[in-house]
Amino acid sequence: MDYEELDLVDADYGYTFHDSSFGNRILVGLNELRLARKFFDMTVCVGLQRFSCHRAVLASASDYFRSMFGGMMKESFSDQVTIFDVDASIMRLLIEFCYTGQIEIKTGNVERLMKAADLFQFPTVKDACSEYLSMNLHPSNSLNIERFAKELSCYALEEASFNYTLQHIVEVTYSKDFTNLEFDKVLQIVSHRLLNIDKEEHAYEICLFWIKSDLSDRIRYFDRLMTVIRFPFIRRIYMLTKIETNTLVRNSRLCTDFIKESKSFTNSTLDRHQKPSIRIQPRPSTGLAEVLVTLGGCDNNCDEITTVGCINPFNSHCRGLATSPQGMRRGFSAVVMDNDIFVTGGSDGIRISNSSWRYRSKLNEWVEMPPMLQAREYHASVSMKNSLYVVSAEGCEKYDLETGVWTALATMPYAVNDCSLSACRDKVFCIGSAVLNNALSFQVYCPKLDEWTVLDCLLPSFCQSSFVPSISSVCGILYFIHEDTTRVIAYDPLRESWLDHVPPMLQLHLGGSVTQYQGKIIVSGGYDERFGLSDAAEMYDPDTKSWSLIGKLPHPMFWHNCVSLFRYVSAPRGDYYYAPPNLHDFSSVTNNLIATKELDRKT
Image 1 (cartoon, rainbow, N blue to C red):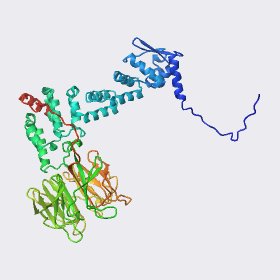
Image 2: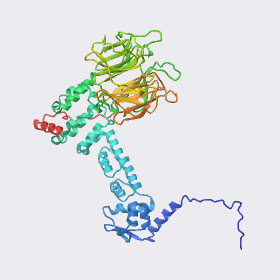
Image 3: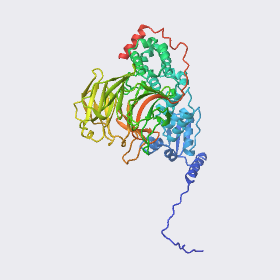
Image 4: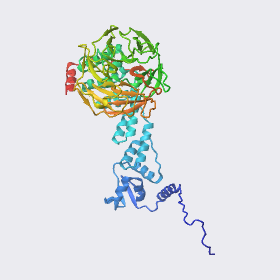
């Protein structure tokens, strides 16, 4: 029976059909052909085993076989291919994977299977093996798995294994793999900030344990391992009884310098921002962290903020600290010395104050200090070597932490308003608006001579604005941060020259605050380019010469002060290392061994 042609309304209408199960049916069909031994066109030989296959299937599943069969090699014209460097059982699994998309990974085959998957370019099988190993990490195998992953350029597994080692370092040290590690790997592990120990002295003990595993050969690495130990955060009693009595330490000039550095840090004579070091960065697992503290300022409604906030930049966790009894007066200044905050002056709108207060970070309390010689508001202060320097139009004075006495300092050549201070290379640098003509004046104070000097250097043109820049010093360089521009400029006091390689900030911080943090500069808060009040904090890293956002303030604010200090943000959560009884006994160390160590160090 003949049918008439269908009369469709829209003859141009088209529809593309997609069968979502078609690919799976094809795969099932190909496997059925394999099991039925139909249409084979080649054989893979591995040892005495022979696997009949379809050339197109292997080439579709593996770039290795695609290159082999699609090029001009003899295998592309042959119906038989011999494969070396792989077990027949592993090749069987890979061939079955080509037809089924499934493969069984077990403890007994994962290493050989992952190597074969890497060699024959089965990336998904390699990733599956990597995931299997990641799920089976253990203190007894993490170091070996990391080494294995590195050999196969499996970066995700390598990183996961390394992080597992850091997290379980105490258990890992008891394994034979740890005692057999090369020096470079031990250094990488012990230097890492995420080493999971509850006290810094355990990192020191882990180094000793590795060295004593082969003392005659590894004694030469002692000094280099000590460069990554955070000595300032080791308990004083431990330093005295365990470290300073160690034969290797006593005979090491480098370790002697580290102990001096630790003491300088403790007594506040070390400027940790001028010579930043890994040794002055506590490990999070010990519960200690360098935090940012915000004081005073105003919020979105221009209401004064009377609270003191504490922020951990690494996790953006915020908490409140004890509030100053007199509140945060406007026009006050705040700096950190001896890991405590010193707040000076300010005004309640009626009376300008000469008061000074100290926040004791260990006790979370404020105590009143002797008053300044002059009442001051909108002044600047800076700490340097156990002394607190204060500068304003009323003059200059210094507070000595040891004597607890304020003394007047030499008069500046040009008295300044709205000034900013920074300590750099044992001198105090000041930039401010001259009282006489409002011109920017750049001056430097030498404590040894009690003398101010006007710096004979031409300020860059963009510095001539309506705002006095804030200055901050890290690594011996002064950085000038303006409020009305994102541009930043630097000055080298040694060369007495301006540097122009500093990139601009990520955003404007009108009314923001500038502080130092781990040898870097942090600018926070203030109004941005769209006149919105910001809670952003960005950091400049002199090593990478780049700015990056590191977190947020408790809430948007301006005209606040921001400083950094060390605080326990949690109880120690790292593991406890049980040192062997004779770990600290180096009585067997001879003068010849020490001489060998010193020679290797100099070399």
